[in-house]
Length: 349
Image (cartoon, rainbow, N blue to C red; front, side):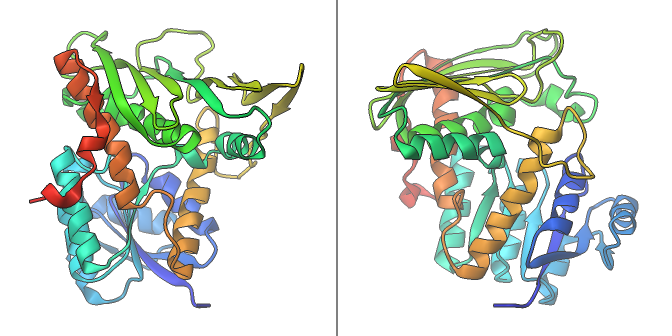
């Protein structure tokens, strides 16, 4: 396959500009139209990125003009939009969170799989340069079999100005950032079963939680702790860095600020600093996340063109979503929840 794959981006909201910038760098693909219910916003994005066409309805998917669709909208719209793409047999990359609840996720997975239309969830944390490097170190066996990990994402950035709907979101922190961290835990440690969670609402007036602490028991018997917060006041603010450590039977990897890794192994240590990609359109403090978007999208296109599996396919992402669902159920009941019981798509409506 040598032709350029033509894409439609739906949703010109908060994060769309990062994705549109990234598509200009993605080899083998080009966005040829954007769509938003706000026609003026769609037109502005088309003009800014020299995109030939803009639309105010997703029904344009029926035109047969697109080889894929990038759905960059809120989770409440995902089932309908993915179903529309599946109906017209257009492969999908869709923003996280996958959907508002596990039952909807199951329906999306079952519907797409039955139709044979590939769907990938845009899960970009695992495509950050620092975590690709950590994966290389783990695969080398340098620190041995994994036993423990902690992934911490705590800051007090004002997410509410650009995304005011978050103030009224009942499932907030775990779905906004926690699900990224749960995917990272799976990427680094493998699948998990047992989940225990406590949540907090620190900011007055929130409908949902803005902090959560999650304990996972992985299938390889390692344990990991995920802690996330939008109510942690530190100066300078570490946003958007994920900090922590990963322990193995022969060593440890520390994940420090400024994208520094300290690897302890065989009685010695070494430091590695992960440098930014130096793209013209990225800017602090968002650079670490922005740099991951082109890698996420390139993986989607490469897999689509080769027919190989997506790392974060709809089926695989159901396992990540099951961890988030289990975390909420644990917080509500005070019990340890086995997330593996939530993966089964055979119960989809």
